[in-house]
Length: 136
Figure 1: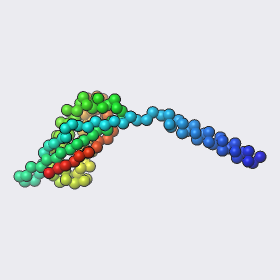
Figure 2: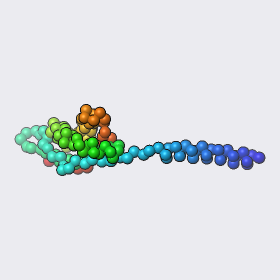
Figure 3: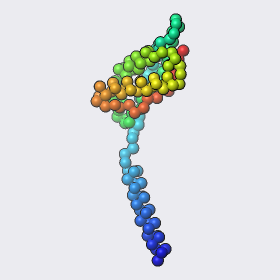
Figure 4: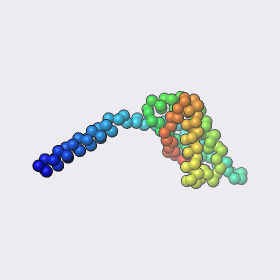
């Protein structure tokens, strides 16, 4: 009798767990996509003294849906100009440190989403990736 109760209890629990995981599996997955700026973004940054510093950057915008890539592509000139402006306002010490690079990335991400919000009504960027970051 005890064995039958335990088997019944295990069956009830396994059905409950399988239904819970089924509900999670049937939820639509995000269709993340990326938009990369071509060609690389190249601009000067602020340096001390007479020397000229420049940064070369390859950047990918991660969006939640592949349908958003077309919207990003349409607004790419505006977004690119904003990133060039952000980079051009940075000082050498920020460009050349890991902490500074992270701050710049966050500033670019925020700027891009603010512009997209103004233009489309949505913050479409989910993440921003610097795939090349070269300075001199």
